[in-house]
Image (cartoon, rainbow, N blue to C red; front, side, top):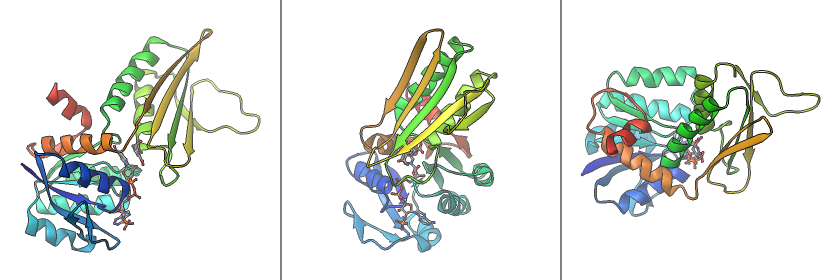
Length: 256
Ligand SMILES: NC(=O)C1=CN([C@@H]2O[C@H](COP(=O)(O)OP(=O)(O)OC[C@H]3O[C@@H](n4cnc5c(N)ncnc54)[C@H](OP(=O)(O)O)[C@@H]3O)[C@@H](O)[C@H]2O)C=CC1
Ligand SMILES: O=C(O)C1=N[C@H](C(=O)O)C[C@H](O)C1
């Protein structure tokens, strides 16, 4: 049984993780914290986030699951490093300094970060690599669509896919975020489009077009449950790892 702590317990993902954990036999939520005061989520008592470092020592979880914001996530990760507790980071929107802080922490604890815990997105990323590699010279555009409460744009998943595309296609050198006015497509650009509306869970589409044809690869998350289950699989897996930095592909590889 993996003993879990959940940060951002009152957030969209924090709630989903606690609810999903309650239905599994392999995890037990021993600590949940939130910045704003809330009593409980799915029967799990929620403590004040300000007490997190002390509660980490008292409740002794094996692993922390964090879906919050980049600043708070960096603080939670630093407390985990101090206490020697593994962490799964699902939070997106880190800047370079934030990423460097995660790298530093991973020298002391196992740290697994992924912008998307859906297995379908892992498959999409592999398919995109193959498609853009097989179609040299074709134009590539990415579009992502999320709920109206999402803060960061483009999404963390979109940025990972863009990194994959640039890795395979060295001729694609810059990202153009939206277009307006007299702005024809340039050599070497990847168009990037972010839409925010309603309560859409998350969609990512990559278009590859040229030579009188168009290939479209799309992933659509139908519920946040898919992210929660993937994050819990990651938590169970990383709890037994040595200090270091891991991603969701490591979990998928280990389960194959
Ligand atoms: N990797 C993946 O598969 C997925 C990643 N995400 C990412 O997870 C993150 C959270 O998303 P979501 O759950 O929708 O967001 P919400 O806004 O619904 O929840 C955010 C949570 O973080 C807490 N929080 C925010 N800022 C702070 C802070 N400075 N200090 C302490 N707590 C803070 C909030 O507490 P309070 O309510 O008190 O402000 C809240 O509990 C985002 O970065 C999102 O992109 C989302 C889905 C899937
Ligand atoms: O904020 C969200 O909701 C999501 N965020 C992640 C991201 O930024 O890629 C993953 C998913 O698309 C949902």
